[in-house]
Image (cartoon, rainbow, N blue to C red):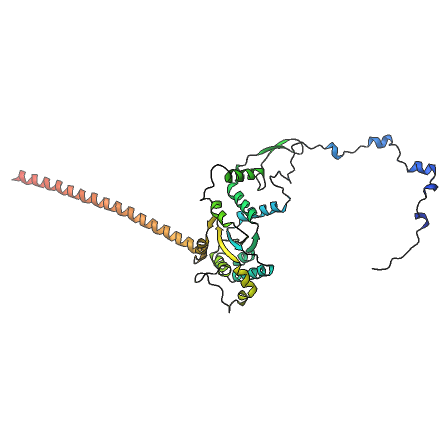
Length: 344
């Protein structure tokens, strides 16, 4: 720190001695009475703009939960993730350290980067794939909101605008009272929650510390690559060899993989168990091949139905034609017999 320099204070800026202030100077220092011109200049203040009692700022709509807390922001993040992500894998983890998480994400990124598929931007899927730890209870509430809250069915509310005019506004966001009431009515009512619902199927999986893997597209090839790293099960999803990927067998990475357990997934708003996830990852050729198989099956079924209908119509036509020919022969034979009798 540089040394402080002591400078003499100028004479005009010295301290003021109260005893040296004259009576006239004291009068000058006192606030003077407002002049008629100054009194005429009155400006509008904030008190003049009185807001209506039921006015709601558009930037801060009413909420059932505090909107500025971390839990509320996590809830909004999870609901957005569930609505926008078509493929989510759910893992249970057992206290992975930061170094182990880094090693697991590194090997997952390497495995996804080696996938090359047709019809899907592999680089985009790899860059947007994310493995993250979630808060189980908040994620459970987000699943309820996504399934049981329908924003289009929320009735509008009448509030006052800034000018005092009555307007209709719909408060249907994820933190609104309408979302809270919809979840409460579906989960705590007299009618039990049906087990066939998506939440009823996935809620038994939401136990303990959880982590999710999100992919921006349903790509069986990328899913198979992720399963071969995070949950290998030969022969369908074998782990990478030590020669091709020696980093996978690093002790820190192996310690992290052993603490992960795949429990299920959510694909295209449908819940899949471990076998279902492996079935999706084992689709050869991806979704395009599956669509081609479906089209071929529909075409084959259509051709079979057409041939059956044509066969029935042809058999009916042949039967009618044979019957007509028999009747014609009988009719012609009777006429010839009558002619022979008349001639004889």
